[in-house]
Figure 1 (spheres, helix red, strand yellow):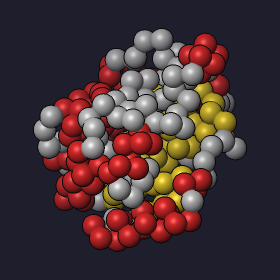
Figure 2: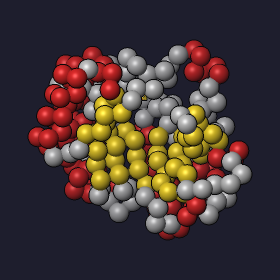
Figure 3: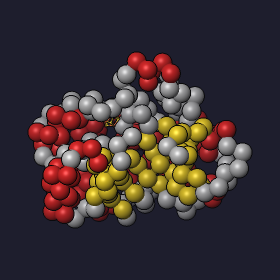
Amino acid sequence: MVILYTLQNGDFINLKDIKIIKKEKVYVNLTNKCPCACTFCLRDTKEMVETNSLWLKREPSAQEIIGEFEKYDLDQFNEVIFCGYGEPTIRLYDIIEIAKYLKRRTNIPLRINTNGLADLIHKKDTAPLLEGLIDTVSISLNASNAEEYLRITRNKFGLESFDAMLKYAVNCKKYVPKVVFTVVDCIGEEEIKACQKVCDNIGIPLRVRPFE
Ligand code: SF4
């Protein structure tokens, strides 16, 4: 099971397979589960389930993840990122437990890569729980309006999900030093411009990233 990994030239490498660690970004593989079924997501393809070793047959517990971090001098890393093939905030309370442990041991920044639907998943305001623990929340904006967002993400919460995601982002700004939206470059120039407008309106930067 791959619990901690890093990326080199776009490929993932199990941290256990690296002999000399030099300021790597370390990703925590938390879950395959997600309330979305994005049109571009490879998560549910047969190939992914059968051949990709990042696919978790069982989720590692918070204690198992902490046990993996125990093996390292954390100051060798330059960032720890909570992610997964699914949505990491499904395991929000485990993230908090692991982040508390990491903050006791190191000052390196901690980030969550998320679809921004944690409030709908947990049916409460979750941003305050991140205070003092998470340094960056990176949220996939995906689209510039509710209809397009639902068409792309096919999430189980329906049309209200877009506004809930924006509200979550704004809330995060109160508790987390850096909040950023991302979109993939393949959505087209017009839609990227429209996404930029949404971000400008709520004062959150947008990063356009290449579609992998
Ligand atoms: S939010 Fe992420 S993990 Fe979930 S379906 Fe979309 S791309 Fe996949």
